[in-house]
Image (cartoon, rainbow, N blue to C red):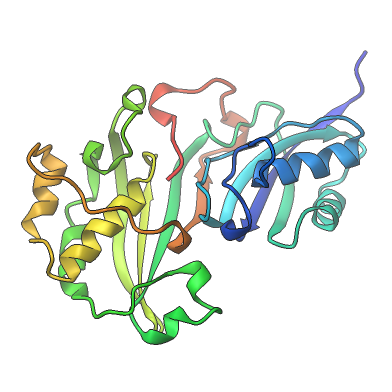
Length: 269
C-alpha cells in the first residue's frame, strides 16, 4: 500500500529573464526544473510539476499556477516556505493550497490573463524597468491602439497572430477583456483575458498594435488580419520581457477533469 499523498496548487511569481522558459530543457535553467529540483529534495524522490501554461524564455509571471503531489506529511504553508528556501531568488511561491488529486492546472483553467508593458518615456530604459517592459522610448497614439482592442473581444480566429507550426491546436480563442491603460508616467499596459492563447499570440498582437499606434500601419488592418486576409502579415512580435502572466482562473477545483478537453489546450505565448 502506497503512502498517503496530497496534491497542491502553487501560485508562482518569477522573473523570466532568469529562465529559459517554463518547460524542462536539458542543461538550461527553467521554472519547471527549479520547482522539480526543490520538490525532489523535500520529498526524497522525483515529483513532477505541471504548469497552467508554458511561458517562453524571458516572459514573467505574477500569477502562474502549478501543481505537485507531495507526501501527506507536508502542510501547505510549510511546503511553500520550504520550496522558497530552495528555489532561486528569481522564483517565488506565493502560496500553496491543497486541492483534489485530479486537479490539473492547465486543462482545468477557464481563463488566463496577461499584461504587456510598453515603455514610452525615456525612463523606461532604466535597469529598474527595462527587464519588465519593452523600452520603446517613442510616442504612441494610444487612442488608435484602444480602438483596435474593440475588435479582439469575443470568439475570434487568431491564426494570423500565432507562431506557425501548431495547426493541430486550432486557432479560435474567446477573448473576454482587452484594453490599453496608462502605466504611471512610463508608458502603457495592454491587458487581455481569454479562455486560451496561441503561441506568442499576445506578443504578435502587441507588435501589430504598437505599429498602428506609431502610424506605421492602418487601423483597418487589424480587422483584415482577424478576418484571415492572406495578403497581410502581422508586425514582428513584441519582445518577451514586456509580457507577464498575471492570473489563471478556475471554476471549481473539485470539478477539474484529469483529461484535457481539446478546446482548452493552450500554448505558451
